[in-house]
Image 1 (spheres, one colour):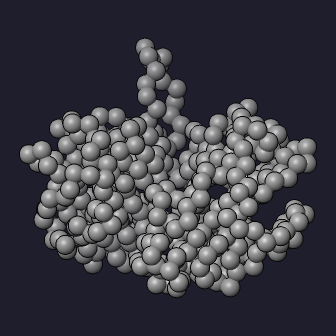
Image 2 (cartoon, helix red, strand yellow):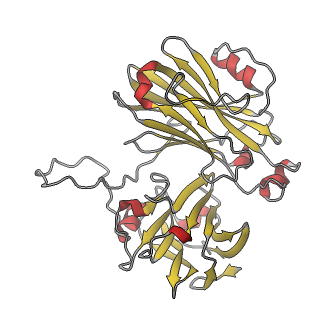
Image 3 (spheres, rainbow, N blue to C red):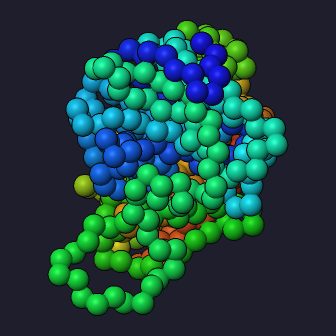
Amino acid sequence: MNMTPGGNLPVPNQTLIVRIQSGAPVDVSAFRLYASGKVNGDTDMVFYGQTANDDRTVIYATAGNSTSFTVDLTRLRPDVEKIAFTATCDGQQTIANLQRLSIQVDANNEVVANGNVDINGRSEAALILGELYRRNGSWKFRFIAQGFNGGLQPLAEHFGVDIADAEPAPAPAPAPKPAPNPVNLSKVSLTKEKPAINLTKKDDFGKIRINLDWHRESKSGGSGLLGGLFGGNKGIDLDIGAFVELQQGHKSVIQALGNGFGDFNRIPYVELQGDDRTGDVAGGEWIFVNGREWKNIKQVLIFAFIYEGVPNWSKTDGVVTIHVPDQPPIETRLTDGNNGRGMCAIARLVNENGSIKVERLNEFFKGHRDMDNAYGWGFRWTAGSK
């Protein structure tokens, strides 16, 4: 149902998918709110820097200019009154620069609510798009499209989120007890102009999580956006993988093809978490790197390849995000794809005297062998399946 701002309608009490789509990059967030209209703590904010709340009733996923929240209404605590959804622009951009902006609610793969924002002439950098809210024991969705002055920080503070200072502040007087860590809104985007970042040396980097996400409109039956674009009845299968080299020379290939899933706690200290065959799994595909063993790892090259479907990278809206504990998320987008080549070398994590150097590669090849030859890994390749 198409809605106008201020309109509301009932939604089923179940797991819903709330999708926000735009014509240009925009940061999207969800806030779990209580009777005060505020959050109770910083874990009530879900966004690119915190992709799930503490009980995982709200889970964030993004691919290109499409963001989704999986919201399990049945498990929300009874004191939760609302889930508000917002969009904020980076830098000096305004809502009018987004070309288009919409929010929709899906239940059982059916659209139950849809709101298209009229962006013409909008001078705000942020919007409160809509909200799921309780009313007399049932749930409803309201389309709001209300402008908000400022960017993500003032919007988050409006909902009661404690935001970390962008720059280090002078050391305060000793506090009687430790305060909770405030939310860090920082994000690092690797681009042609800024292709690398160095992370300070640590003895233990913890669990390094690397995520590949892409456009999730295709379904296994071939309907939906990607099914139509790529042809056939399976849509596209975009896989993440890694070349891993240890300090003592051991080399491995981590990928679903050939069931090379690796191992997190033993050599090669890198593990692929499952295999999303359609792009429909919330959150996409993940590789975990054991940061406790970083001293034993020389480099990890992250790649993606199109296992099924015509190589058309521009339609995947693919994005890889690297999550290192206590660091802002690092993302790089698959924006420069050569549509005749189904393999992309995305990024490389290099051990430089104990620190992590993250490099954007974004180079495209016909297949594994060509990429191997370009980077000199020296693997032997045969046809494989999964």
